[in-house]
Length: 128
Image (cartoon, rainbow, N blue to C red; front, side):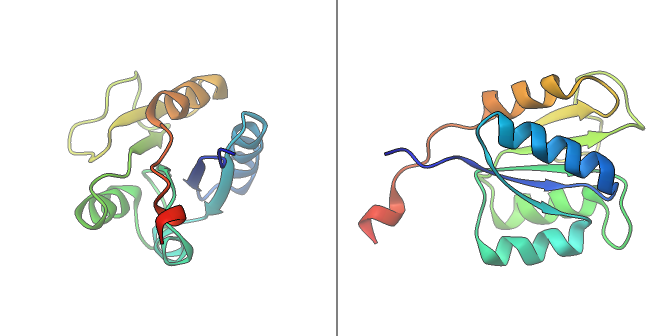
């Protein structure tokens, strides 16, 4: 039996966080959420997700800092940055991420990015 792939969604706007999380859950992902970079790092202590989606502009610890920290500690986790301050599908300069989702565009685009970046993880837990 294949377990659901997990996503950590980091977004400070509660309404948008709920909408995107619901859409990813409906698409078949196990979704955990965090409201800023600090809470995201605490979520990582509870378990490492298959992919991380993070807003760039948040209080306490920005997505820029969060993604940089995660890439340094967990280089194999795919990272998707999202923001309404940048447009297009290219990762903005200076952002450490594998893909970019422009907030305000249809959430299906985020679902496609996540789907394209997640792949079944080796069953490491089965060997432990």
